[in-house]
Length: 179
Image (cartoon, rainbow, N blue to C red; front, side, top):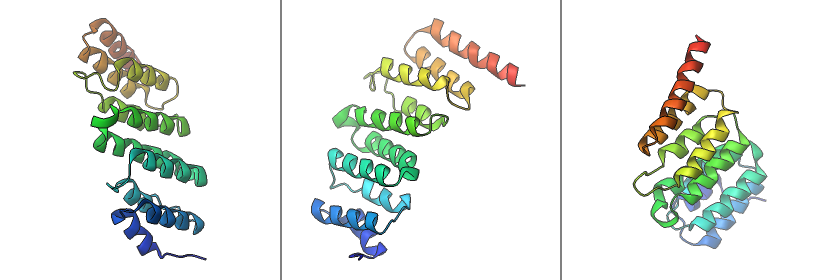
């Protein structure tokens, strides 16, 4: 039997400070089969939760509701990118962009978002991680041209004009063959 109403769950997710109370509300939400990702977004933005706690909630939610896994991972990645970047050097953001891409490999957004979080001056996430991830996406995404352009831009930012030209030419060739 439900202990909390949906409004009480939302409130605990958004403003709760005690992990145990938040966890109880989370467990109750799962027991009620609440599969609306908007409810859980409040939880992911709760500033009282640590990165480990957010990962715990996100992983459990994705396991319980596989249909929410992609949105959960994308949301977690954006939270880690925005709020914890100074603490983890984008490692958690990259982890969850990779998980999102694994759930829906044909989707372009995890790759683009990961590229957007790159800081070339600090090299976070590390350039080679990012390039490896984006290159893996070329074989599976629907919109290869945009991903090739992003790779070209990343190489150009890092001063490798030869690779930048290579990926820009691939994107241009792909564009011509599609027209």
